[in-house]
Image (cartoon, rainbow, N blue to C red; front, top):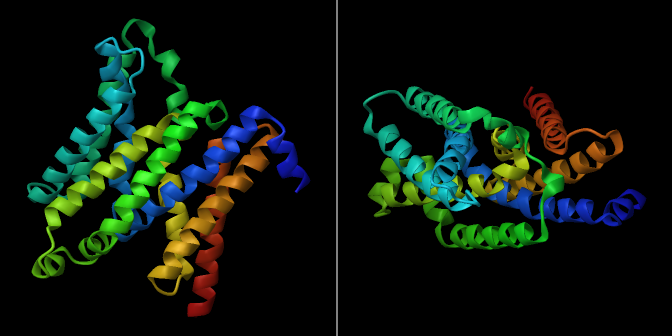
Length: 271
């Protein structure tokens, strides 16, 4: 409690604390389906494409590249999803191509005239730099994603389990699949500046993967994912402050520790 009071006494740490409380449940909602649908590499490719989204905004002379990032993310996600389902090539190959192209094109465009140095923070993010206005954006994103989740979760879940079965039940499989990847892409782009493209996929996947190790049923899976995400975020923020290290990587390391802990618990119970 004393540590929480200390964190709350500084404006930038208070904003970071609120950011964690908003961001980690957002990642939890998305991460459960990312893990369930075996889309970990897909979300990783979306994170890598953030560089190109920023570069597009810079090329068009935008002071704030966020609109260009969001538009590019939606188009990138839909195109990658369409080719992923076309069966012209294996899924991992398609995602690998898109991921490498997204990084390479972004690096080329941003490195013109040695300009990439100003965007290196996108690699690991900077949660401590989050502003009050950005917290409102993050909160609004959480509300929108939660609303979509409540309205479409059953469809999302059915598609993640068996697209053919979902189609036989009259669900619009392709529409639901595209809606999910667009929501995922926009959420990733909005959070990338605070989490970093090298870490955002880990924050999406690790809490959900840890919960899946020990959960009994879907309700437990969702609840534990949120609990593990918040625990990792809050403890990671506290440890990074106490040890004067980067916040994002510390959060990921805590989440990884939770994953391995639940993995060995599940393995012991199964033996």
